[in-house]
Image 1 (cartoon, rainbow, N blue to C red):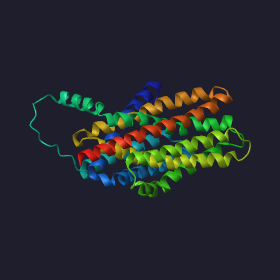
Image 2: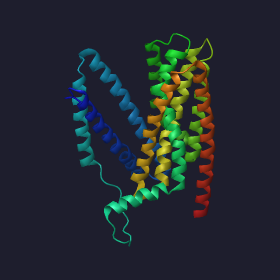
Image 3: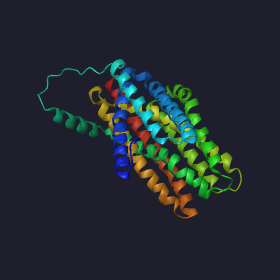
Image 4: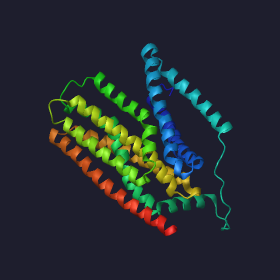
Amino acid sequence: MAIANHFYIVVMGNLLLGLGTGLYWPAMEAIVADLAVPTERKEAYAITRLADNIGLQLGIIFGGIVVNFTGAYRALFIVDSISFFIFAGVIYLAVKETYKPVKLKLKIVTKRKKNTNGWLLAFSDRNLIIFVMVNVFFTFYISQIHSTIPLYLNNFVSGNFSPLIISSIFTGHTALTVIFQLPVARKLRNFSHPQALIISAILWGLGFIVIGIAGIVEIGNILLTTSALSLFAIAIISYVPCASALVADLAPESLRGIYLAINAQCWAIGYLIGPLLGGWVLDRTQIVVKIFWLSMVITVGITVGILQYLDRRLRNENLANK
């Protein structure tokens, strides 16, 4: 990206960044799962998410300062590049492999067939498939915060929603995800993973109701919007650690990377559908936008029902295993 001088180099740079991100997330979550015992995984993933949010905030702040005072966009990419080479060195030297494959008396098969069988086994796990169904909803909800809602506030909500006010509201939203990440994780540790996700889903539903009301009433819109984004912040920090911990618990140790890769793919699907559908809705009339927020609340009800079913399945399986 630092040396890009025409469109095709920018595309190539973005493809490499996408590949790096795709390799990073499942591996990172697998490492956390290997290093933390099952009862501690929620908080372990919460700490990891806290680091993610702090990094995002620092990147936005320092990147904005550099660009504002120097306009040196290319220098940012160079600094990023150096930081990732340092990151690679730290991982190579300081992070030891934790997974030790169990030796089983199985027929000798090719590596490719082993990998294929791993994916087939993952997709034959009914609990994982049930979770994937609701996980796409969650990632779709998250995509609305950064794609649909800012334009919705600007075009459909009454009040003085200047760029500065919108930016301040979203800054507060991100700050809440940093401040409350660990306290919320501790509060949720006594709940099963599906139950914690149900709590997250209910918060999403309440947030969608409030943001929908903000587009109907004439007064108090900034307060309503701030309340909605606060609910979304708590919903996100309730969702992310629990979702990763649930997938890590569902996965056999030898297939943990594949299971977490499927979990990461849900984000890609949610972010593919979310901005497209949200943009289409915002090009329609006010009544279509109101129906959109109502439909989001309905999908939350569906999500809660599926999670309750998954919770019962997992409880019954645990009882049967005992």
